[in-house]
Image 1 (cartoon, rainbow over the protein chains, first blue to last red):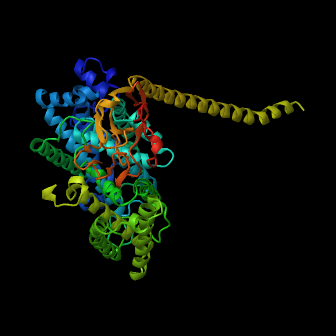
Image 2: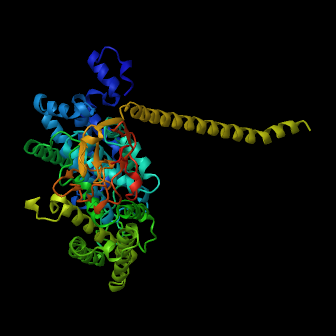
Image 3: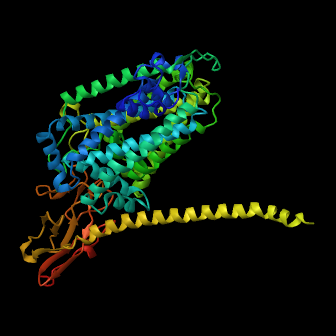
Length: 463
Length: 174
């Protein structure tokens, strides 16, 4: 068991080098472990030795956290490859993408993997966020990890958005133009903020180098710091939240099983299936590339990237100051404070908090599915606050008034649900969350599939 | 009595140590401030240089008589429209929609600017015909020397409404 260097003559040069790298693999012949044993010890630096058997259940996590980590690695790898082909200057960017797709071996495939991987990552982290919320995995001691997760969600969103500009096609140019145009409506700092982000007054070379730096250096560096922090906090919390039935005592703990192979094997399977899926998607569907950006010609309609489409829909109905600044700030604030609300009980591990919570969530979803399209239609066809109440500034008539009405409706919904079901605070907060979630999804769908020329409502097959 | 100086030293020791600790923290904060200042100065000057490079901001549009009254001429390189109103006055309008920054084309048939992105529309004077655009199109200062129209495109001027002072007339008004 002593250091291998003390026994000269026995191992040959290559063995000595091997043992110097992996000293623990050196054993007497009869107790030698399999050659890949060092891998196990490596894995156990990141994972605990044993895990709760019940947390292995697929219906607890759906493998979403692991999928996000796999996608980040995939995006890092393909992103590094793309960096060798891509030229971040407006005059060259579009041509360099064409060159990548047409002349570089597997160039199109690598770009496709990066494109689909990025879009799926956004979906996966959003679902992960929903899973954590609906299993109550934000209660103590996981409160701060919720915030780290939210931060990384913003980073993924930022990464998708900055990457959206880089191909420099019509789609990219105008989507980024209108998204940065929204910044102007932030009072006092908006104009300056827009100029900092664009590196001037217009979208141009300075914007591109800003976005390229953020996309390829700042955000990856932040993710590299925050990801291990996120994982470490999961371990510090004693592993994943333990799933239980609504009426089960939270103190009951299940059996512990060794991480290898129980957890690792499952993670590898999820990773392999995910990578195979993305591969297949990338072989069948190419990442979109429109005509080269033309600053003189806005396409009709111009839409934001799909993940900002819900926001764009809101902008059509409500004054930008409220749609883009006030309401997102309120929602972000509530999300950050969500784990710190004094709840009646710790529902960690129970899907949708309780049986009642499940019923209320369904009601909230139905309410959102019925009323959001009605609101969109009514606002497009009848409502015209600015004309009905002339003489007051549009900030009030089409901003403050509808925003206040929405807020009042939400508060009313909260109180009504709480009374009608004599619900706990957990369940009522969750119902409002579900309502907003479905409203947001429906608004996103509306802009992506139901808005055509001039952003007028139309049918999906006519868009 | 011999012990006294020693005791005194023991008493001063923690405060000296805490003083030195505070000094280190203070120096660290100064160093941090320096780094932040350097980063900001770096990013800032990088930006302002890009703007200086844009030296050909003064665009010569041409002889005033060349433009028909009640017409709009697009200047693609200058990124603006030169509108000549019915009374012969000139307005240089930014082609950026004041809603979210799309480029608004001039629709000759309907005599209006129509934004393709969110259906805002503007008059020949840049006034809003239909929302969501919150204010009229931005304008650029015009100088007319020897009947030649020049437009200063370095900085667009925002306006909340259309006023007649914004119009520039040729020297010899008929």
